[in-house]
Length: 175
Image (cartoon, rainbow, N blue to C red):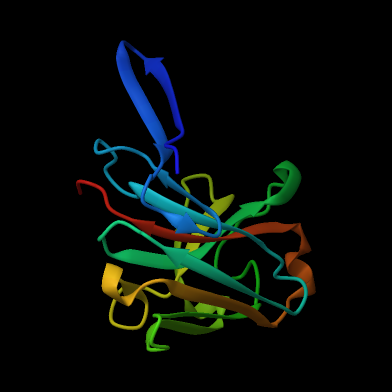
């Protein structure tokens, strides 16, 4: 797999980010570089509709050996000024990651208002995740991969049709 790089000059500093050569599987893994304070690695597995029942499966392998947190990146659609906090949606979601022996390494389930919310300063974006710990984050091991990621919207929220949601795994950073 080739490494894709995008770089630009920012105040005389060269900033680069690109996909990670060892990764293979669904979605796109971006390496924001060793200077990233948080979220050095972001695996984007794509959009999720919170307004309808759905389920999807993904295969991931070759992730860096960092602790990954899985969650949903929420954003107001089309520039809507909807404030994204725990009252924005009542959708119930389940996310599970299993290793190649079918051992569960991550299991998060429940209504999104009960998850951990990390909102942007303006409040129109939020990363919603199951917190940290044994069932909400994991450190990939080559001998246990590939991993399977399953997401299901168990109870949709029709009010969430104006929310763009993406399934992300985030890890790393110098902080």
